[in-house]
Structure formats: C-alpha cells, structure tokens
Length: 151
Image 1 (cartoon, rainbow, N blue to C red):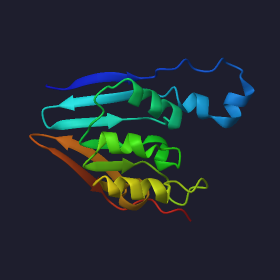
Image 2 (image 1 turned 90 degrees about the vertical axis):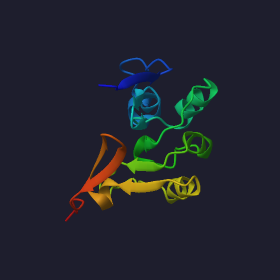
Image 3 (image 1 turned 180 degrees about the vertical axis):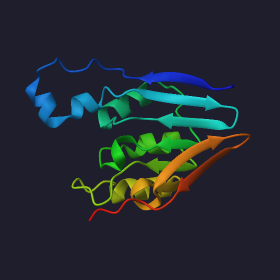
Image 4 (image 1 turned 45 degrees about the vertical axis):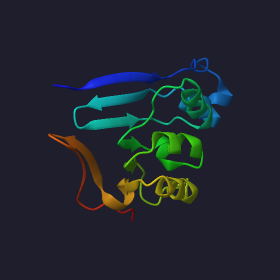
C-alpha cells in the first residue's frame, strides 16, 4: 500500500537485433535500461539499471524531478556516471551493486568521491553483502552479512 512506480526510461530505442557493434560495446544496450522511481510514504528510491552517460543526460534534459532518498547507482558505479546526474539526484544513500574483485574495476573511485561530495552514504555489495531498502514506517537501508569473497 502506498507504493507508486514511475517509469522514467528508456528514452531511446534499443539497437537492432544483430547489431554486432552494439553487442560488443554494450553502451547502446545499457542506455536502454529501464529506470524506475519508487515513491513510498517513507521516501523515494531511484532504480537506474545500467544507464550510462547519454541516458543520464537524456533524463536530465527531461526536467523530471530525479531527487531520491536512495539511489541504485547506475552501471555498478562505473566511470560512466555523470557528476551532474549524481548531484541532481542528491541521494542520502547510494547503493552500488558490484561483485568483489571484478575485472572492470567497478566502482570507480571518481564516482565514489562524487557521491561522497553529494553527501551520500555509500553501501557496496562487494563490501557490505546483501543490501535491502525497507520502508515501514520510515525508509531504512540495511545490509546483511558479509560480502562474498572471491577465491
């Protein structure tokens, strides 16, 4: 009860099936991720999928109110996050879903610094384990257990 979901994206068409370059690069596919804003009596949560710079810029241009109490950081905290986007969202809590010791080097230190500069507390699944957002009667973010460690 009291949950509202707004679909904010995708704002772009996906690349054609069989587009080899899109399959290799992944950016065009990432930029067609579904972006949802969950509005609850306890607060707002922005779920951003894998959107990268272009899709983040598209969202900023729409002038949609992107502010959220909790942000699921786009694309595992990769370097393809716009500081302007992160500053516009102004989350109190930022959740980075990322595997321990991943080969991509996610999350980017630059993105972590931008989130800290925006005043967000950052939780990372590689360091904090499972992270859950609960909201009854007020919004809370909890982590459970230790992160999985790669061998």
